[in-house]
Image 1 (cartoon, helix red, strand yellow):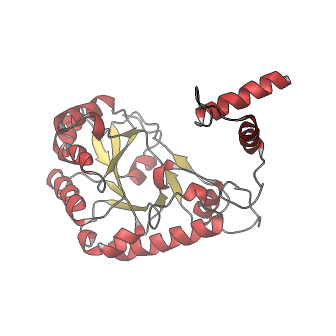
Image 2 (cartoon, one colour):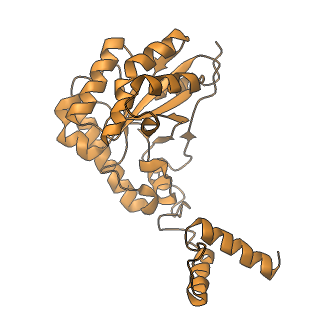
Image 3 (cartoon, helix red, strand yellow):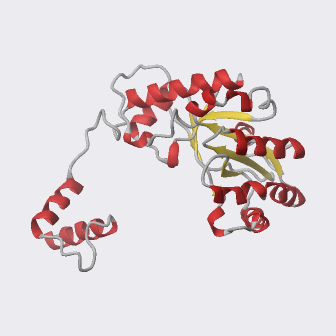
Length: 269
């Protein structure tokens, strides 16, 4: 690629980042400085991006598995809830799941698990708990040492509140940085993201519509993202849970935890 092509590529990258806009009048000096930033090399080791092992034989750093969905012909779906627990919404979700006998996986924020332990204590028997960091800080901006400390603190709080030993990690915002990769591997976690999520803002005041949307989009092996904490528009998804569960079961789907879904990988209907 010639110099002109390089400059065009840089300009396109910066435009997507919002650094160059029509009529913005970004000066030549400022543009040159911004372009230099995009070319700056990140360190191979250390920092938030580096995932190279500094010590080759640290425990747990042999591999890290990341799961978005599971390949299976069986009509299985894993329902997951992020960001809790908190009294109002988490209690509502647990009550609904108990009513329908549906298991789920709860990716808990450690700080909330410690503060609201009474909300989940004794109620997680059919469910699975997992780590969603200590206070929902973006782990992709964190080096390995800080990520490890964050996840360990959350792990201990979740285990104390629920009596379960978390084995899964969902990094906040779905952001996976190098430091967090190293920390997760060392702590023996499997990273779980999602393949489908509730779009509550698309269905204002229409829980049934949100439920139908999920039912129509679910495929065997889906990992569905929902939240039991957040802005009030998310209540559309939670209030639609009964319709969603009944709709999916009407199509032959079975609700399982994420770990049970992973264990079913490759299974046939």
